Amino acid sequence: MQKQPGHDASSGTRFGPELMARLDALAAFTEVEGQLTRRYLSPAHLAAMRQVEAWMTEAGMSVRVDPLMSLFGRYEGKTPRAPAIMIGSHIDTVIDAGRYDGNLGVLAAIAVVAELRERGERLDHAVEVCAFGEEEGSRFSAHILTSSALIGAVGPELLEVRDADGITVRQALARAGGNAEAYRDCIRPRGEIAAFLELHIEQGPVLEAEGKALAAVTAINGSVRSVVTVKGFAGHAGTVPMGQRRDALAAAAEMILAVERIGASAPGLVATVGRITALPGAQNVIPGRASFTIDMRSPSDAVRDRAHAALVPALQEIARKRGVEVDIDTYQRNAATALDPLVIDAASEAIAACGEEPLRLPSGAGHDAMIMASHCPSAMIFLRCRDGISHNPAESITVEDADLGVRALLEAVRRLDARLGVRPSGSDTVAPTLDCGTASDPEGLTPANRGNS
Ligand code: GLV
Ligand code: MN
Ligand code: MN
Image (cartoon, rainbow, N blue to C red):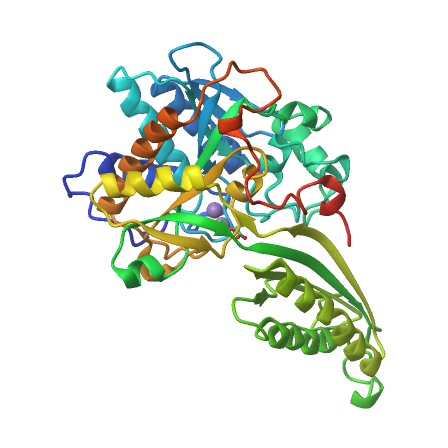
């Protein structure tokens, strides 16, 4: 691994040094030497799972793997089979990632359970640590697949999505020891998880600018994801005059600028083209086919949907002018999600109990918490990262902030334990105090809504 900016390991914080050392150790599980790339079901992911499982076991948890290869470590409460407070995040990464996105939340959650166990402290609730396998969409376009499976929002069509090598999720699972056929066994009955709390780096610059370490997250922006395919006509780069070409890549370039223009047309709206391919991909051939992705997000579903709808005629007009065909496949919509006031308050009070002034922030990035929020009361704690940099190997946090993150998560779990009523697990209804009727909108979380639109 290349040396990445990180922390001063000599600082004398209780949880920070070990957490940072483990984050460094986990970053060694990569598909690509010299960078951190750990995509879902890759050998690096499977090896990282084994390491995380070992840490969960060492912290006193019983560990199970679900059919889609998420890991769950369970620390029982005072009574067996009590509903669980779930904490954790994901362990897949983007390509050429930083080491804290997702991984911080998983390893900090393990540190919380290790501390409870060391103190001999059992709660009324069980505590479960999740290490979701697929959140980033960096291998398959079906992103946030594994928490979606937990809430029952995965349909068989998502298992047929292919990676760049043509391998389906179903095939990749079979090779990795998972079981696509049993995807419905990932579902956790309502009531079994009393609350979900995810610690995550902020991935933005607000905390640092405000001089604060931690924030309670109030809401998560919605997103829509599409793949655009442009069909032109391949030809000889030396012989076809410029005026007679139907160049798919040049048309895609003009379309991408339209995406950028529309993405800048409303406050809070963002649009990104993160991947482009051109075929046949030769220096001396006019591209006959091009495709690119669109990721569009906004705190307002209405604003985002209006902007996305405006893209269609804009791209079609460019296609018409250039004599090419365009197809827009919108494969995923996630609604903007308001997080749960009870869990937000617990997070906020926990931050204050750690001596920090708690900010409240919305999230521009997507997270497993936005999926979990339609299943049980959910919220997040954001932790400051240097210069707001994320999805980049330069991601960096301090050992002191890492320490605070564990403390705040532990405090929040204790507060949730005290405030959430405990019902016997296995009931598929939810006690009034656990009612999942948060302000989150389930649109986009059902298999039907996750299909093309
Ligand atoms: C996840 O990192 C996302 O917001 O794309
Ligand atoms: Mn993440
Ligand atoms: Mn990410």
